[in-house]
Image (cartoon, rainbow, N blue to C red):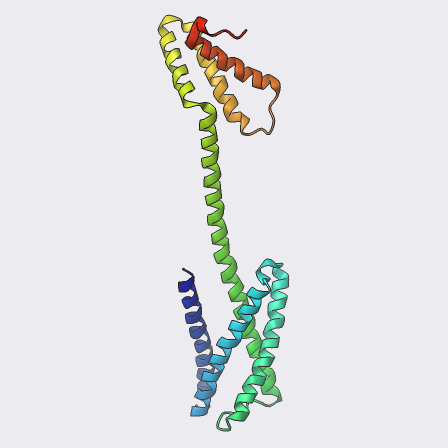
Length: 239
C-alpha cells in the first residue's frame, strides 16, 4: 500500500511539473515566440527543479509536522515557504542560465525576475495547498474508518458484557419454569414473567449508569432469588 502511494506520488509529481512546463512553452508559442532548443533545455531543467524543490518542501512539511498545527498557521507557513522557495529557485535557475550561454537570458531582467518569483510562488503555494488537501482528506477517511471500527469493537464488548450478565443458563431455566407454570399456576407464571422482565430491564439499564443504589441492587437480587425459588421450590429458602 505504501509502495503504491509512493509510486503514485512520483508519477503525479512528474506529470504535474511536466504539464506546467508544457503550458509555459505553449504560452510562448501562442504569443508568437519562436521555440529553440535552448527553450526546451531550460524547460526540462525547470521541470526537474520543480520536482526537486517541491519534494524538499514536502520533507519540511512532514519533518516539522505542520499537519498537526492550526489550519490558518499552515496556510501562512505554506505561503512564506512558497515565496522563499521561488527566490531560491530563481537563483538556481540564474546559475544554470549563466553556466549555459546557449540558453535564454532575456527573462532575467528586473521585470522578468519579479514575474518568475511571482509565478513560482503561486505554483509552490498551490502545490502546498493541494498537498495538505489530499493529506487531510485521506486521513479524515482513515480516522472515520478507525472510528467505525472502534464503535463496532465497543458494541461487541458491550454485547459480550450483556451476555455475561444475563447468564444464558439462568435465562433458559427461568423460561422453562415459567412455561411449566402456565398450566399449573397462572398467577405464579405471571409473577415469574414480571420478575424476569425486571431483571432484564435492570441489566440493560445498569450499563448506562456509573452507579446504582443499594435498593436497585436488592431488587435485582430479590427477583433473581424469586425466580430460582420457582425452580427449586422448598429446596431454596433465603428469607
